[in-house]
Image (cartoon, rainbow, N blue to C red):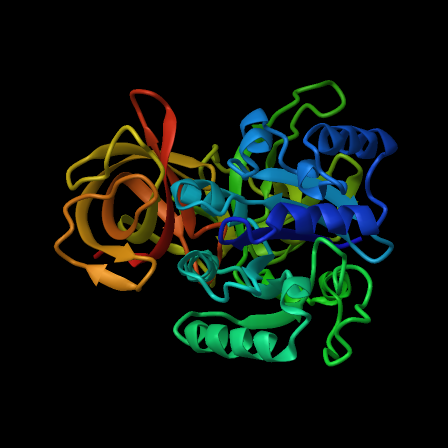
Amino acid sequence: MELLRLATAGSVDDGKSTLIGRLLYDSKSIFEDQLESIEATSEARGSETVDLALLTDGLRAEREQGITIDVAHRYFATPKRKFIIGDTPGHIQYTRNMVTGASVADLAIVLIDARKGVLEQSRRHAFIASLLRIPHIVLAVNKMDLVDYSEDVFNEIHADFTAFAAKLDVGDLTFIPMSALNGDNVVDRSENMPWYEGSTLLHHLEEVHIASDRNLVDARFPVQYVIRPQTPEHPDYRGYAGTVAGGVFKKGDEVIVLPSGFTSKVEAVETADGELEQAFPPMACTIRLEDEIDISRGDMICRTNNQPESGQDIEAMVCWMSEFSELKPNAKLALKHTTRSVRAMVKDLRYRLDINTLHRDEDATSLTLNEIGRVKLRTTQPLFFDEYRRNRMTGSFILIDEATNVTVGAGMIVGSGS
């Protein structure tokens, strides 16, 4: 079955954790011992009903404060599709957690409290979702039960957010009125909102088309590991293991290896289960070539007539994630891009972006925790990349503090820095 990765987003107390709990509960994806545990915790806290938010808020601090701090992932499946949900925090100080949780999502659910309308944090998370190039966004207008299931309230929020989304690069936007607490329009259709003729959230998640979201045009295969078993059965075996980052690879394809520039043909595409007819993203596999070429981790296999950009200068949007340091010009960091690790220097900070107003502060001299800005970097070795808007796998990277080995930034390439 097809796998859909989704992430929640939105302001504090909009009901993100409760919505995920309701999805799991109504789709019968909760084990009995899990249900008994959250029932006992809810009763101990004096709650009259089962607090479904406890299914994802697992940290002690989260349960004590009633907030989400770190990203929690939950898996469930229906007869039509498999799902991995990332429950991301809404607080502004946890923006970095939201970025990491949503970076691999196919779909984002942005929740809005029907009583409060579109808040600053709602806009912030919607912008981050568009910056991360999440192809599908669902605006879930939650807590409709607290506004008497008013169609006028829903239409007002619909118009307000549509006007804001016009400034963003959002490909697919869907609006669903719901009550996560009561289950209205989450898994089952609500009888309280006969004016709404759209699908429920689960139905939309099952039916949304994501197959065309992957880049199946630009063949990209970053080599992660060279397999040389050197056993009596396979004395000359040489395979290149990795995850397909774009395009399709099949036997007989003419390919080029970067950075060497040597060409060959694909002899076989294999997995542990045997040979494949073809491989496409995000499949993990092993590629064997007809010719013996010196290939190592960090090299990239692609098509001879369709190669990624190559260079040591890149421009990128960077989200800074360190509370102990700042990103400043001339800073030296380690950079990990696909399977390639290099050293990099910050050549220039073009601007810091105010993600509330979308204003560009070109006088900014640094990026601090949770801030996002456009940065020019110079690397010690060439990178083989595509723009993030074209390929999220070959267009992203992380920055690492070499002294502590801590990830301090996440970047999305917008072009070469030359």
